[in-house]
Amino acid sequence: MIDPISWEFSWPYILTAFIGGYSIGSVPFGLIFTQMSGIGDIRDIGSGNIGATNVLRTGKKGIAAATLTADILKGACAALIGMQFGPDIAVVAALGAFLGHLFPIWLKFRGGKGVATAVGIILALSWQVGLIALAVWLLAAALLRYSSLAALLGAVAAPLAAWWFATPQLVELYAVISILIWIKHYQNIKRLLTGQESKIGAKADTYSANDGGC
Image (cartoon, rainbow, N blue to C red; front, side, top):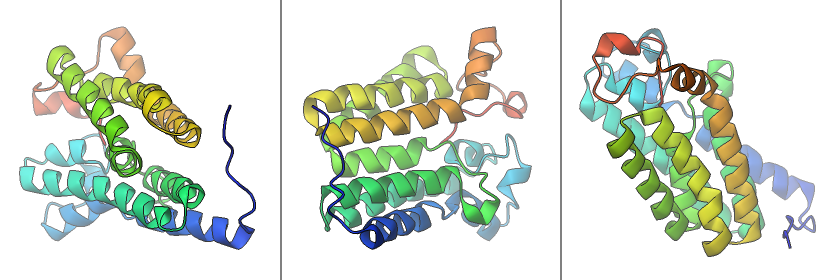
């Protein structure tokens, strides 16, 4: 039976958890790091996505790695801080962080695709589920050579694995996250269906519109 969030918490606490999580998640590290390094506005490069995959297209592997790490950590931090106040607050804060990454107010609600932030959230709240989702993601990327498809499969794996290793609340949270990741990847899905999606390792100039990013 699904275990809903306990609304015995007053609205100010729930709202504070969401706003706090959103504030953490909305920090656009990809944009900040590329501007600090002199690369320029990442939104004017490649696909225009602020995630690590697009940052990597600048050729700055260190900056891309820093972006990936920061995006993972902001999801994990929001979830872990929320956990200090109970599992309900952790779920709300985690969802806020994920939505903050997808729809940051600072960038007119045009953010990343959420994969790295989702990884941080899942690892923080249920590390077994996180490892399973990561394994699916990496295995699919190695075998199929499509970054976007690997991310989509990893997103599906999370709520399925949570059914066995986590609470019903987390199954619900991961299902919502998975659905939003699929929605944000709708252009990639269209290209996958038409055979136009670029594979991992393809030449950089084929990536201008393609992004299976984080």
